[in-house]
Image 1: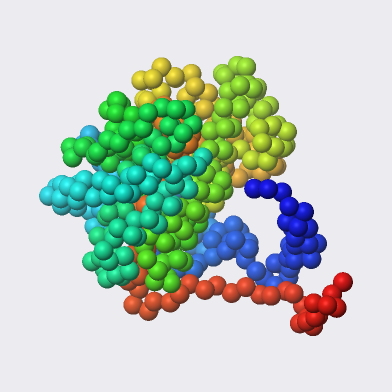
Image 2: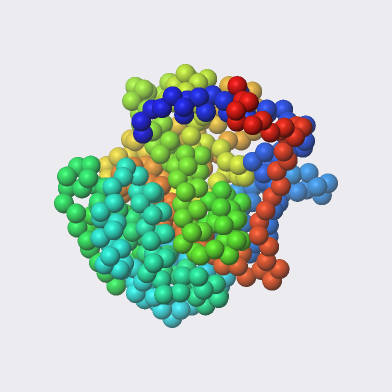
Length: 449
């Protein structure tokens, strides 16, 4: 975009005259970011889809930190993951069915749902050609545009009946992997000159397996198992996360599903939300280069403290992947992912790299406490290992955040359907207070200086 003097002048005017001073938020009791003073979220809705638990109240009503819990429709994520691992099967389709319906499927229902997913995975020919023709450096942008374009292929895009909303929801869960895989192939062609290919989904494969097949064809059973676990762990995270809330806010206007999901994609793309995994990946790469002895905790501490002191990595003062807005002692997703990441690192001959990351995880909380003078626990969140896992599976950074969207679409559509089905539907409209001051007198154009 060409530079223009007027744009600089407009921006400077905003900085000088139109920026709201920080102290006014406290003066008027505004809960900035919809956060209470203790950092918890302001209660703005009710849901049966998912729950994120980081503390519980004792007999006196005082909040006590506990190991984190993540519930999908009331089921503990650890129970869901451990069951599918024990039975040696993929879990994402079962979780998607659970989130959409509120109930676990039996064997027949799960098979029927898999067949419905496979039926919906292929895209219209014109949509494929559109994806392949799009040029850009971010797949999330292509994903958003492609989702909006699906409106034109839907025979009843504005039908908000429960039956049609569910049909649209299942279709989007199925089509996200295909859109992202084809967008990745197009990006790879544009950036590296590699040939573009369009592989149709295979009926016998799961969503995770089909995605790997459509992006690179060859993959190991552990690659697919690990990607499936990531999809399960990221499928839902309560109604209060930014992208899900964006979907609910947009859906409350009774707009079409494609517009609502595009809003969620735009939210997830931000570096403070889904894009955080890229920051984690960059920080880990920085530490691997800066730390000469990957087994020396003192050297790791030194570099972590430099990061906290805004002297290392991106000088933000943040150790990315450490800490969470809700979880206090532990993120349940991290422990589940860590175990499979260890197996995958062993299969790929990269145990030293995994051991180093585990040491960074262990020392990060200690470094934080020492620098910030606090004994509050700082658990690693799911982003801490997700970048390494994607890399071990053979997926590049350009696809990290799109994979988050591919998982979260199940939660998004479940929350949208719940928003549409409230008996007393109301558009979500929070209040903002104007702090301009007295009403200004209009000055005619010929008298302005």
